[in-house]
Length: 364
Image 1 (tube, rainbow, N blue to C red):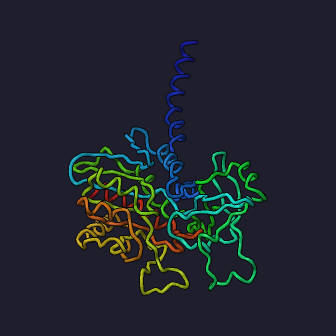
Image 2: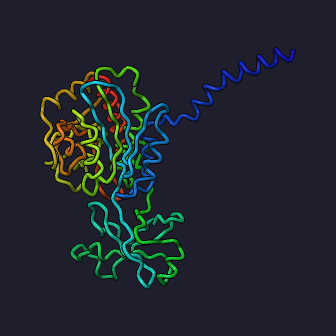
Image 3: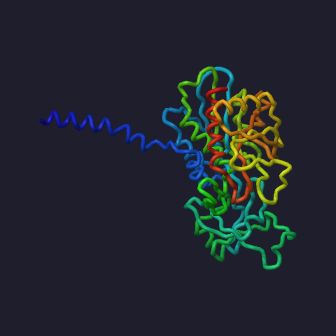
C-alpha cells in the first residue's frame, strides 16, 4: 500500500511540475511588458535596473552577454547574413547637479526635451537609499507665459526641506537620476500615454519576440538581439556594439514620431496610430535602400501583418552600424508627443511590430 501511494504521489508531482514551471515563465505580451518596463527608471547612463529586468525575463538557456555599460545582448544561429535587432533601454531625464544651501536641487539634462515641460510637475529622485519625491519649482506668477525663457539652469527641485544638510539626510547626492513622476494613463484599453514609451516599447517588442521565436528552426543566418544604452545622448551604446557585432542587416526598433495629433502639420510624418507597424524609410540619420524596404513589406504581407511606410525626424541606433558595413532598416510604431510625459502608443501597433520582428527572423 505504501509503495502504491508513493507511486501515485510521484506521478501527480510529475504531472504538476510543467504547470508550475509554466506559471513561473514570464512569457508576457509586448503590451504587458511595456507597462512594466516604462515604470523602471533608466535615465541615460543609469540603465542598470532596466537591463536587470530584461536579463532576468529572457527565456532560459540563452547565452546572454552584458558589458560594463549595461549593453545586453544574445546571439543565435550561425552563418550569413548576421541580422541585428536593437532597442535602447535609456530614457531622457535629469541628473542632480548641485544641492543648494536652501536644500533645492539643480540638474543637468540627459537627452533632448523642453525643460518647461517639467515646470510645476512632481518628480522622482533615485538615491542610493531608494526613491524620494520632489517638485519642480514653478516660476513666479506672471512669468510663466510661453514667451518667457525657461532653460535647464532654471530647473530647481524642491524636496520639502529648507537646507542642504536636510537634503543630504534624505540620501540625495550629486549624480542621482531624476524622472518625471510616471503614471500609466489609459485613454482606452488599447491606447496608452506615459513617459518612456521611447524606447521601452522597443525593448518590450524584442523581449516578447525572444519568447515566441522558434530558435531551433533558425537556419542559414545569425541573429542578435541587443538592448543598448545611452541612445538619447548620442548613440553611445550602439557605437560600442556595432564594431563588436559586425552585422550585415540592422533593424533598430524605436519610435516613429508621427504627426497624428491635433496641432501637428499632417504634410510630414503623418502615420495614424492603430494602423500597424512602421518602416522608417528616411529619418535625420539614414535613408533605407528601397529594395530592402520592399523585402520587409513582402515578408509582412506574407504573414498578414499591417505595415506603414513613412519619413520622420530624429536618428536611430542602426545608423552607426552602417560604417561597419550594415544596411540600416529602422522599424517602429507610430507615436505622438515624443519625449514628453504623455507619449502615446496603440496596442495594435505594438503587437504588429512584434509579429514583424518574428517574421523577419523566420523569413529573411
